[in-house]
Image (cartoon, rainbow over all chains, first blue to last red):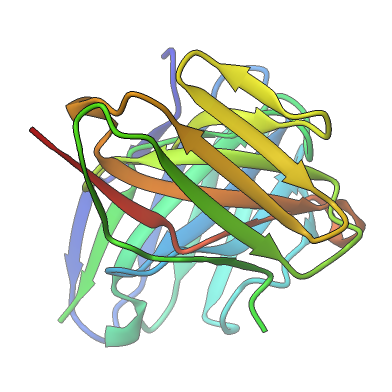
Amino acid sequence: GAGVSQSPSNKVTEKGKDVELRCDPISGHTALYWYRQSLGQGLEFLIYFQGNSAPDKSGLPSDRFSAERTGGSVSTLTIQRTQQEDSAVYLCASSLLAGVTEQFFGPGTRLTVL
Amino acid sequence: RKEVEQDPGPFNVPEGATVAFNCTYSNSASQSFFWYRQDCRKEPKLLMSVYSSGNEDGRFTAQLNRASQYISLLIRDSKLSDSATYLCVVNLSNTGNQFYFGTGTSLTVIP
């Protein structure tokens, strides 16, 4: 596709369940970022990938959060044992080069934990 | 202290008005700066990068003041379609290409 895609677009889950969020970056983009945005809040950085490696995991809020990227392309963000405070929009972005080039965002996954 | 701070607004201005937003950042080693626009329930999109010498794109002018650690965005001749939230973004390259987003400034242009 021409842009960053994310799936699912919406996810409703029960507290304690695990969820997987997927991001397909723009082809050829080496850098991939995960953010989350709570209602009325700014974007909170979670993790970024350069290729398949994650040099910076400092933003992951707890050990229930993990992410991986394979083949320098698709990335999945996994949240284990979801809590209500995990409810937010999870945004993925990719950029051609890490750091200085524009980030292109996907439409996000709206996660609701009941 | 937040890495990036913005006045959340809201700014409500009439069509044709000029409006300016400021954003301050805390880390003097910050390397690159951007303004993004986010429409309601949509993803952020790049509006413009901010260069040291200042830059202009049509009705939009961005400026960087490294000494005072702030960046600004000026919108001239506001249009209804400019209504959105404007996000200030700073990249701290010494922390591994981590981008910090401000919470955004809300703008509504009124007919």
